[in-house]
Amino acid sequence: MSTAQQIPFIEAQDPAIAAAIRGEEDREANGLELVPSENYVSKATHEALGSSFTNKYSEGLPGKRYYGGQEFTDVIENICIERACKLFNCKYANVQPLSGAPANLAVYSALMKPGDTIMGMDLSHGGHLTHGNPHTHSAKIYNFVTYGMKDPDTGEIDFDEMRETALAEKPKIIIAGFSAYSRELDYQKFADIAKEVGAYAVADMAHIAGLIAAGALKNPFDYGFDVILTTTHKSLRGPRGGMILIKDSEDIFKKVNRAVFPGLQGGPHMNNIAAKAVAFGEALKPEFKAYAQQILKNAKAMADVFERENVRMLGGGTENHLILADVYGSLNVTGQEAETVLDEVGITLNKNSIAGETRSMFDPSGIRFGTPAITTRGLKEKESARVAELMIEAMKHKDDQAKKEEIREEIRGIAHAFPIPDSFVK
Ligand SMILES: *Cc1c(COP(=O)(O)O)cnc(C)c1O
Image (tube, rainbow, N blue to C red):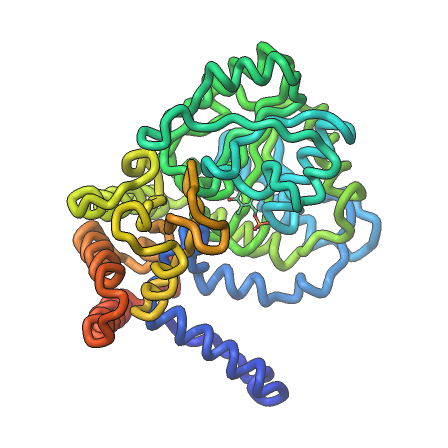
């Protein structure tokens, strides 16, 4: 368990970098990771990331490359694509996007012209930066319009308003997806509205890809979605990277391929593609289904504690892997204060704005946290609930040094009892 990575060459030639790598290993081993978009990869995935494929240029697609020497890159990319399609039940996949945001941009540029309109979830209601934040490049190219929740306390999406806006604005894409929303989405309603207004139904499942792959949450492809894009490093537990999946349209597939390369990227990162293939192989195993179910159970166990302790959760709780809690409203602790005090006791998460935010972006009312990483470490409902209790204790006693030290010790104990595993397959 938690075997330290062998880095003899770095140690010999670059002590500063070696020390930082060891520092990060210790940080990960001694604390609990509750950032809902983070996870730990297996040693097998690590090995693929560190493999010789990092040396190779492979512009183009398997069988259609621009440089020679592609015997082995074609093998891994084909395996990667095949596994991706099997995991998500679709016909086509492009596994080259370097990360989530580049995958978003590739889908936008494949399916829209500059100036076209796209409809995404309001960022303050849980949407991601790539769905219309004014500081992104895509917001300068495309016209973003939004949908959001009818009621932040139930999380219900306002589909009537979505339909009205869609009819008026005629978006080319309606994108279903989020990074701070705790409810299952009604994909059928998205697809119906998209169809009515002639838009592509696109899902950005970056956070929940692992849960969908395992069948723990609904697959948008079962509800008429055309395209799904995702990261590979969140609940899917692979290396950092992105991917675009197409249900069955060859026309869309070709557009997406051209948008990725040469549209936006040069050579794909073949070491990452090798690592994606390894991680997808892990996700196809029965163990991964149990992992995904446990992610949901652990999140529910934490939400139950927050509910019992009367801490308001946006959406009224959780149906997925994450919780967005209004700690300012409920505990009179700001998001920044909460992030800082939890950091002090060994729990990593992030402050987050909430719908109807009354504070600033830099010190908002909420915190966001989730269970993919602690579930990888083997925590079950009982330990997850205990972590939730300790979080609330720490926030309530944010100025009590002795209390915080006591909590820090207990968190360290949990972290040591549940080391980061080397392997996820039996
Ligand atoms: C994380 C995330 C992204 C961006 O992924 P990066 O790998 O950080 O670029 C895009 N969309 C959603 C919904 C996300 O959660």
